[in-house]
Every structure is written in C-alpha cells, then in structure tokens.
Image (tube, rainbow, N blue to C red; front, side):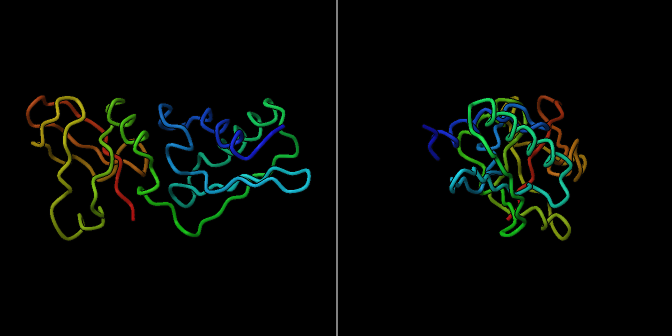
Length: 161
C-alpha cells in the first residue's frame, strides 16, 4: 500500500535538473503530498517565479510515482508562500558544498544593491578571502565568485528570504 511517507521517500529520487546532486526534497521545492480518494497530489513551489525547470520537474514526479505504482498523480504549482533558501535541507547544503557550490549564507543578497557582497567561503579550499565576480551565475539562483587564495571560480547559491 502506498502511503504519504513512501511518496516523500520516492520523491527523494527526483533530482533538480540544474543541480543534479540535489533532490527536489533537498531543495525544498516539494511543499506537500496528499492522498485523497484515488488521487495523489504533490504541491511544488519554484525557486524562482518562472523557473524553466518546473515543467520538467513536474513530468519527473509523475513519471517516477507512476513507475512506483502510484496512480492518478497530479502536480500543483503554488507561488505563495514564495520559496526561500531557508527551505534547503541541511543535507542539501552539504551536497551543494561537496559539489563545489557555496550554499547560501544567512543574509539577504538584496543588500548587494546598496552594500558589500555577502562574505562567502570557497567550497574548494575553505578560504573566506573571496570576491563576487558577477551577481548572476550560470542560473538566476546563483552568483559567480572567485577565491583570492586558490584562484578557483565557483558558484554561490544566492540567499532568498
């Protein structure tokens, strides 16, 4: 018998298409799972409004759950409350770091418009002597940094509150 707990566990297998070491559970994209009558409803929130990966993620959820024997799967997209980096799990933060992406620091990046860039440790060597190269990285949710010690460039997953 399929339970809500099993569905949450199954969803850990759905990787984020932009950062494949993270599951959609690690990222906090999955907001709710419900079983009603003969329907499974998975509620998801994009990391950014208009995120191009959401349709792909929806298709992956439906495909995986049907493969696991869950029938009549529906995916609901919600924008409120807006996704925040606070929803990234501790496991997800560790996976980001191991993958070479600095996880979000506990400050809002909007301050960059009026103040200094967030202080971000290098995920390669751990040095805190880094500089922001660009507020925009390979995706809208990342900024590009460079370590002043090891000279390696790296992505930083922006903090959103």
